[in-house]
Length: 603
Image: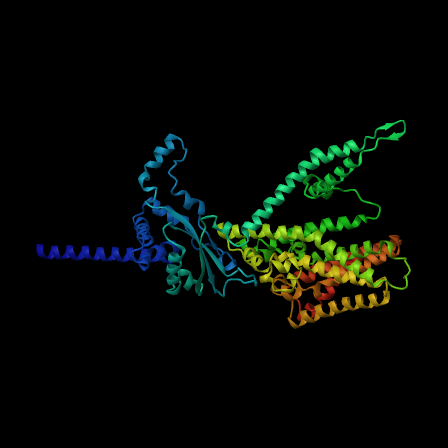
C-alpha cells in the first residue's frame, strides 16, 4: 500500500514538473516572439565565446530571474507598437532610459518614499554588471497589408535596442539576420511579411566624422565666415557709425572748407575699401536691410505682399514635407488633407510658381526701365550686347553662389551629425550626395538629375531660376534689337511647356493626388521645361506694366470680374489637386490648371 502511494506521489510530482517546464518553455517562446531584444539575447550562442555573448547570456538570465536591471534593460528596448497597418514603423524604446540605467546617482525623493521603494526592490539589483549602449536597427519589411503611399521610408522599421556596450554593430547584425531568416518574431506570421536588415547603427558619437572628407575644410570656412561677421559687426557699430555721424558735421571757416592733405585722402580711401568688405559681413547692416520696409518710387507694393504670403505658404508646406520621415501616423495626414485648410497647405507644390512668376516679372520690369521707348541704334553694337549679357550673369552668380556654398557646407555638417547621432533614418542623405555632387549645385544644374542624387533637394529652385534668368535675359536683350523675333521665341517656349506638361501627364497616367506628385516629381515637378511657364508669364506681365508705365486704369466692373476669376481659379486648382477621383484624361489637364494659377497672378 505504501509502495503504491509512493509511486503515485512520484508520478504526480513528475507530472507537475513536466507541466511547469512546458509552461516555462512556452512562456520563454512567447517572450522571444514578442520582444526583439530578448530574442537577440537568446541567440547569444551564435557569437561563441565573445565578450558580447557572455554579457548577453547574463542579460538573458537577469530577465528570466526578474532581476531589476535586466527588466530595465529590456524595458528600454523597442517592441512592436500599435498602428503598424497605418504606418507606425517606429519601435524606438527609450534611449535616455537605457543610458540612465548605469547612473548610480540616486533619485532625490523624500526619505519616506525612498524607504518604501526599497521594500520592493533590492538596490544592488538596479545596476548592470557591465556597460550598456543604445543601438538602432533599420529593417525593411514587405508587408502588403500596411497602407503604402509611395514614400521612400514607409517600409522601413526603426528598432531601438538596449544591449551590452561590448557588442559591436557586426555582432548585432549577425544575430538579427539569423532571427529574420528563421522568422522567429510573431509579426512575421501575423502580418505575412519578411524582414531584411539594412543597417545597425551605434549612436555613440566619437566625433571621428569631423575628420573625414571635406568636413575639416567646411569647418575652417565657417569659422572664417563667423570671424568676418563678428569683425564686420564691430567695425560697423564702433567705427563706421561714428564716421557717418562725423561726416554730417561740416566745419566752415569764413565760407571756406578745410581741405585734407592728399596723404590723408589716400589713407581714407584704403580704409574705405577694407571697410566695405567688412561691412558685407555686418550682422547689424544685413538685419537692417532685411527688415527695411521703406519702398522706393519704382517699387510695386503688391509684389512684397505676394512674396511674403507665398513664403509663409512654402515654409509651412516644406516643414510637413521634410518631416514625413518622422511621422508614425502618416496615413492620417492623407485623411486630414480633405479638410479645406490642409488642402491649401498640401497644394504648396504650386506655391513655387509664385516665385517663378515674380522672378520673371522683376527681370523684365527692371531691365526695361530705361529701354522700353528707346529706338534701335544702327549699326548694332553686338559686342556691347554680348558684354551686357555676361556681366549681368556674373553679377547674379557672384551674388548668389557664396551664400549657396555656405548653405551646402552647413547642411553637409548637420546631415552628417544627424546620421551619426539620430535614431531616425533620414531619407535625404545630404552628407553623402553633397560630397559627390556639390558641383552640380555650383553650376546650377542639379535640377537636371534624379531627386535621390540631388545635393539639397530644395535647391532645384535656384537652378531653375538661374536657367530661366539666362533664357529671359537673352530674350530681353534680343528684344532691344529684334523685338518680334523675341516675342515668337517667348511664345513658342510658353506653348511648348504647356503641351509638354500635358503630354507627360498623359503618358504617365498622372492623377493629381499627393502620392502621385511625390512619385512623379522627377518628371513633372523638377524639370525646368515643365516649370518655365510662370516665369514667362511674369516676364509678359512685367513688360505690360512697364509699357503702360504702371498706369493701367480698370473700371470697377473689371476689378470685380477679376476678383471672381481669381476665386474661381483658386477653388478649381485646389479641388483638382486634392481630389483622388480624377480620370486620366483630366489628369493630363494638370498643365492647364497650373497655367490658370499663373494667369491669376497676372490678373
